[in-house]
Amino acid sequence: MNRLAALIAFLVLAGFLVILAIEVPSLDLILVIVLTLGLAAYDFFGSTRKPRQ
Image 1 (cartoon, helix red, strand yellow):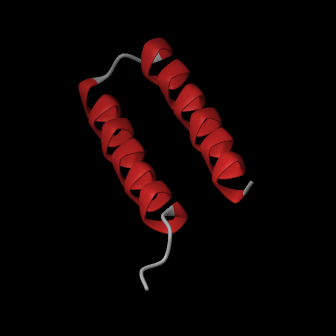
Image 2 (image 1 turned 90 degrees about the vertical axis):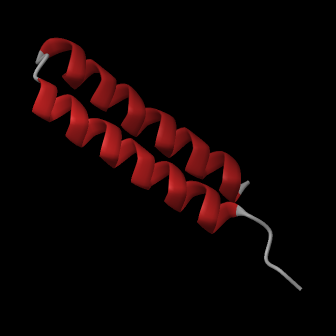
C-alpha cells in the first residue's frame, strides 16, 4: 500500500513537471526537471524496496 501511494505521488510530480517543461521550453529548466525527477525516482526506489535481512 505504501508503495502504491509513493508511486501515485511520483506520477503526480512527474506529470506536473512535464507540463511545466512543455509550457516553458527552456533548456536550463528542462535540465533541472530531469535532475529533479531522477532524484525523486532514486528516493522512490530506495525508500520503497524491501529491507535487507
